[in-house]
Image (cartoon, rainbow, N blue to C red; front, side, top):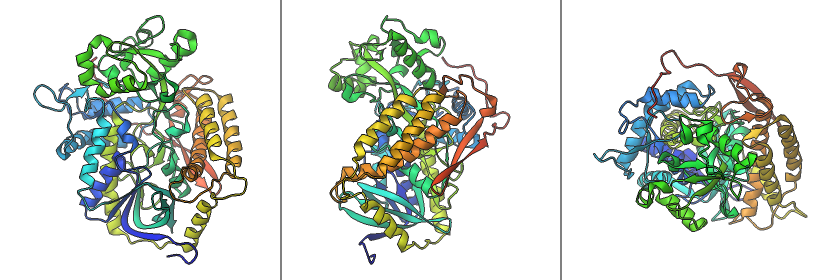
Length: 573
């Protein structure tokens, strides 16, 4: 206990922040390695953003298209990253994804089957072959259910409804973390040899997003303040199809599985416009291509009544749709009153995934801070400038496992660093400082203004003036945010969480927009109307490192893969 403020101490070998696919898979690996593992989660166990991934997980198993192999998957992934991916990360991923999917099946995942009983695989945008292992259109939910069941049968300790506010570092090495229990309203110090950040992305920076409420980029901001480098922050993927109507559901994901199973995109004239933009791949081109095509149709006046385009799969018939896309059927029936077996869906681009994040070693997933690891959407290096659909779920498995494995090895080789009592007292003062201020600023209008302005100026098509204006807005909001506060205490106080998340969101937004402003070209998901070409001199990653109250921006040339890694392939479609 502290002399000033009471807090509980948890001693553990490894602390995992986040209980989505990456965090749970890491916990299985570390617990089975025999180290004391603790998982903390901002939301309830089983309610991670991973459950919202629907279409499937990519792995070159070759059950449907036997020509598929890891080199083709490598080539597809590296091509979609537009030469910003770390080729070693992509190689590890493409080689290990099949075994991780088969392992998930052994854990109990109930995949859809081919007629001969193998895991079925569906087509997805920009994949050369049918590669996505799936469970109808609720694959992420099945992944979480399976991993969660496996975790609770290990010795790993799960502490959900928990907010971590600071990563603790001593002598350049991890010493633990600090946070509080939402349920108990009590502070905790975690003394730990290693920490894995698996807390997801930054999608809630934008007003229109498919991301759940947890995705405020807390892990990125905390890692950055702890000394870890962030990279590719400007690279945000806008999924082509989010719900449009009614407004209460705007942005909710409409899985790419709809297009993978034969859905077509139409404008208000009934034209299948992807025949114009991508005559070969059509609706199954890369997400950035389809999203920009949808956006162009809408802004040029060929959109729907509510500002979208039409997605139609009704021609496949009710039996097929109810079998292949049951969740989509229910989603539209319950939220929009539309029967997709008979009617067209209205869809528009929605903020979906952050390719940027914490820079890690491709092999070990460790950051430049000793003992600090990252995996899943919180980490970067695999997806480069654009993520291939379906790669995110298998990413969680491949690098979640690696994070757990190497964090376990690290913790076995190192002792716990001491924690500075003053650092704890300072962090308690910072958190308590948001409570019961005199005439505090309400955090919610600031959050709303940030999300509105980010969606308006830093969306699918960007330009220098908008980006400069957004940097000005972020600076103004940072000043306002110094005065935010709420009443009440630590226990079940969403206003306090908003105050804490706002600081993280502003930090991430500033780096994201700075990177977007600096990258004077168009590449993958980053499109500049004032710099429409992709330029060879920009084949480099933008890296941010914390420097006191500010940050440093450097550039890291992206290495080409070794000769023979990229293969030429006659596409299956």
